[in-house]
Length: 147
Image (cartoon, rainbow, N blue to C red):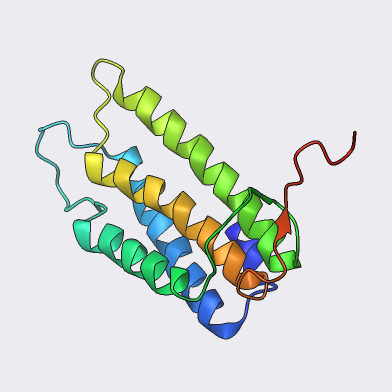
């Protein structure tokens, strides 16, 4: 989904999304090789705090360019924003699956990895608003608008 959004993103957003795609492969590698406490013959990839902190810093920086929301935002607008909204829902689903996996006996999932995917979905939401002309082209929910 992020790759689809990148097709429509400006240069700055594309750079962020390219980095995130690479980090998601790191996350996949971590989930494929969880920390079971057993020694390995190689150093496994792990999501680290600085990756989560970078997402948070980018969220904060993008939010300074946006007006506060007064309504829910519908997943629509520009092609980049629409794909980013869809990517956000995929990230939320992945977060729920990771939490469910972590709740199972013998299935360790690092808290940093869960924090990363949680912050990622927020990042994608804010990025979608940026892609919608810094929120000016957001499509807002109109409660009861079709009555």
